[in-house]
Image (cartoon, rainbow, N blue to C red; front, top):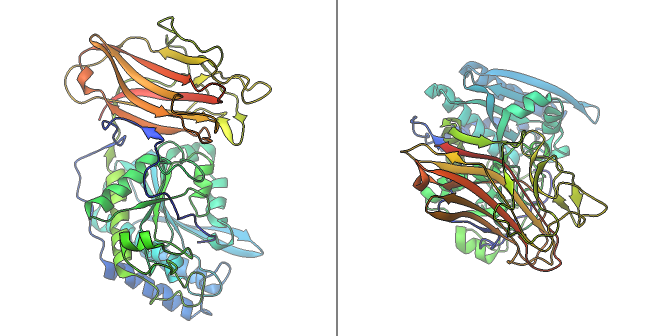
Length: 507
């Protein structure tokens, strides 16, 4: 781990996402083998090898040093023998050659890649057994278990061990920068594991949906589902988790920068465990999560076995759950790349004087951060409130009340479960309030049902795409319309909203 993490997150969920209980993860899982229990002894055996490599090579496994190349060769050798297609990807930084180890498991949809990564390098001052031998060993043993079980995932599985993370994410940045855009688009999720065995451990999960409401905002659309998959595992074993911010300071950073959903776990670095956190997880309040962070004492004795064991199993749970997920079958969808008959102000009662909904290519705006993203989730167009930027962020934002837009008729099939899924954002300035909102409703023969609501708040919120899903099975066999409303009802507040990639699917 390169720099200080933001770990003092609010324990309670902020009142930012107000949605009904019907919201669920987007993917459903196919019938497949249960996620395995990754043996702690096997993960620690890899750590012993990394310790031995460091001891034999000047006490570290740092970029450009012989201990790093020996570490990469150790990982690659095991993966080669297990049947992975592996590559040592060289790059140069600060006059030295570094390497990423990239390992692809045969099979799965090549256009739907799940990637799992951890940085393999240490700092020069120590062997880096927790930072980040722990993440490297845990994903290595997970990859080897994939091979032992002969897993046949729906998604294509790719594992990576990054070089020179400690010098500024150099290996992962090189990998992402050198991927053609078509190959980047195939990576549908990236899971990052950096320090998962801290001796005074916390249990942090990257806050993909920004439910904590602090820091850098949500990850790219799809990150919330990765977060929930990891949270579900810890919930199943009775271990509470807390969010850690997507601050871009580990190897997920280059991925989220190009719009790839990301997630992962983290057990803490040099930050100090609070009394509340010690009550939640045990350990010692007032002491760093890892007192040996970036020090020579980051050795085999600097590992909490329970935390390492739980996180290794969480990694396996995520890989098996996500990689074997069968994509939902779309029964209706709209990406807004062409006009399909959405109607603005369908009831004739809208009050907004500007920023009315329209389909188009949005122009980016900024006011204390992004308020209208200049890109859609997919393609070029989306539904957006006032797509033009104008001379200032407030030139084409919503003013004066409510703006609405309604879909054409959608004939839903009878029988079976149905889900409505979509990407969205609601951005506002600090002069907003809960009167401002984004709402999604389903209009059926028997009336209108609200299935999603995002309220404003007296805090600055940037525009960043998130994703949601609602159960609409009650409308099976009916002809319905989708109604989307956004409102600036707080007076002079700056409010922007967007919706993209709306679909009704069979899970």
